[in-house]
Image 1 (cartoon, rainbow over the protein chains, first blue to last red):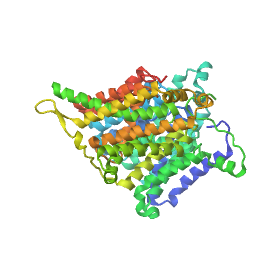
Image 2: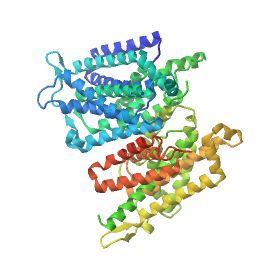
Image 3: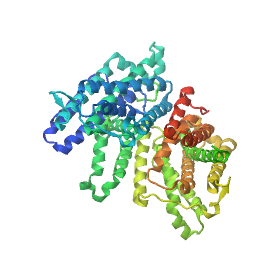
Image 4: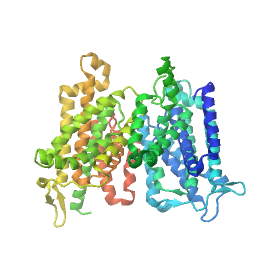
Length: 337
Length: 293
């Protein structure tokens, strides 16, 4: 999140969203479904980027908010008629944000790795509540019988409508977070990331800022969860598991921390790499060992791209022309800046 | 719950806690001394368990002997493996951001898991308990306690004592402790810190592999066994205080007790209890029980 508008970045983001808008015209049914899923993960990743890249708080329990958003959508939907999107979506976001508020209020007492683990602990609690109580259908999960709609206007059962709606939500989230990054609030968060001590010395009470960011992030994760539940029409406890929290963290690290478009690139790269290595057309019988290719790709990317995929152009420039790139803002870990 | 059952559960809690301690001690060492978040540590445990299964026929035919020669061969292999792994991958991670370490070690988990699948397959295997330790101790008319579980606890206690001795009473331990406080200073005093780190890492790997090998006859050997151990070990490390071996021991025993008795007394909530415990402890002491000093 930089202050000046960089033309290259703006162009990249505009092209990316333009391509996503045009994709349904030649994507095919499977492609549309896949890209819609990736866009949902991109929203999810953006929510975490606000915390990790924006504020320097590494949350390892983001799946809980995602899962709560998803479960709310299914549990609150009436059995045999369509719920109105107008209240169901805000309800999902609000419940996820409410849980984030409670978790944040407690876990922000801790720092660094301890914070990572406390957020994991609260996510695991939510996981076991969903997993072991009849509230959410237990381990089997539950189905969403009729997808929500705005009567006569928006029917999310139609894959194309759903795709367009998801893209709109993604663009809105991205734009919103870009604005947040430029606002006084966002600059305060960046200050906390770089040096919380100094922020306090300059008169900021940092705790409410961090709590607000955490709650906002939880709400956005809930929004992504809502979309996920509506897309598949099915939720199960695995949505809240730590694997999911880990996957979204991997996405933003892979993409490049500290940049909103890193979350976007990371979500696409991670899911598309999975699809690539799972593809039997390319790898034949070896496709069932797809983890190997994914793992090696991740290791190579760490070795070659210390700043994630976002850093590729700068890295290429450095290797080709030997020009020293300017260091991007350091991320996380509360180091002195 | 009668006395014999209570005693059995206590022994189970102790054995589980000590085993967790073994895996977690390597994790807290690597974290506390080198500052590397090693997500692949659970994989070392998994590799150990699979070694106990896969090495048995090979070792049996070349060296003869049973379970104990497998342990010895596995231990040697794991030290070499840890040493090479540090040299190839981890030595590049020291200067990197924590999150880059997370990413690379996550990649390593995927690779190890898939190599395991390629080499040994995805089936669940049992490992026989060595005949020497196959007996049980009679506690009451109907209740018995297997000797092998006592053996696990014994191995863990012996290793814990050995670690304590090395750290506090030897020159090597002194250098390691100094290296964790100030890497540059130790280096300028003429100590080869690169080699030292490599040794510590290899030791951490070897301990996790040993834990996996020793646990294999009880837990059986199955895909994904490393991941469940990994998360619970991070819980142990964090509750104990990062870098503190003493804290890891206490936290591991605490978790052993809570988990074992939770499964007996509150089976509906057994899974969540450990995390409730962690949240409570960290809210009470945000730096864990023992902050590493």
